[in-house]
Image 1: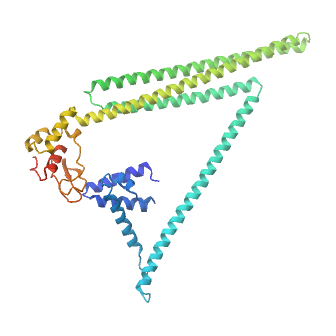
Image 2: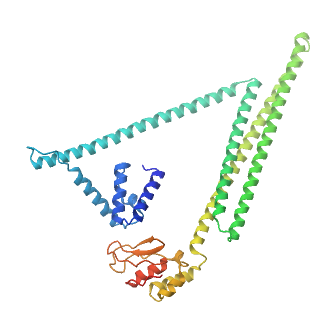
Image 3: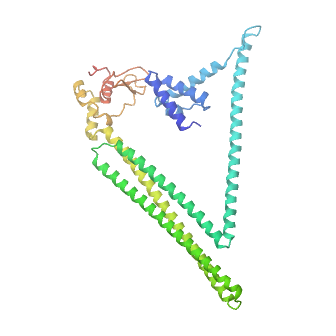
Length: 401
């Protein structure tokens, strides 16, 4: 399985080859070699097409078959010179190539088995950890003394504070991404700018609410902890006279037990409040994710608007139709420039051979449309509309200066 960073590096390598003048077949063969020899992946039409971003459904399988033909040719290694007949030398070379491929297959199978064993061990460790955690929680619930319950409550408070701190950090990260997106937007887009500012204000309000909940939880924790400590101190103060006055021992013991029940009730209420605070924090985090998705959608809309440059879609369709039918002159195409390029669609077939799928390339600011099958080209132009008009006309038009 190829990772995302490796896929991106391979695409950049192919783009460099394309910029150096490499054709579709060279790009496909290079992608096949990198996938097979460097990543151990069998090249497929979908994988090669995803990496090269060029070629049709009939061209890529031909390139892959050419790659396998070269591999089979290279695997027929001659084992040397001497008294061995040539036919035997060729068969020995094929055997060595087959042994090499079998060794690679066995090594890959061994790697997969070891990886499965490691995953199984990791799952067992995680299950053991979960079981240990469950036993620890059960043991904590069986403890009766109020000091142990207080320590468990403080541990829960610290855990919730860490979670709230992580939520705050994530909110800050979303804020940074939002600011970076705002810097890329055009200053003239007033409607989108207002929506982004509204989202920023909403996020600031959510962070303030989270901080307020955190502060309220801290105050509640300190309050209930102090009440528990006071109840314990009061119980200890009342127990000491009981050792001296036997008649009042039963009465003071009943008072102490009532204080213990009250402390347990207060502790349960405190845990319920903590659970409510955590649920509110989770809802706020979900709202933050929704706002981040909306900002991403706005970014995509801005990119689309920048590509279309404010041109009406119906007008752009009419201009494209006039250009493809040859009713616009070279000077008129030069005056239009790149205004309509965001609405221009590439032709699916070459008008010269009617088999190849045209490819669009840009070199030194010039745009050119060419057929990989018959090498028919439109010549370099200043815009996509001009290149497509030349390509559809069936002949090269004079280049625009």
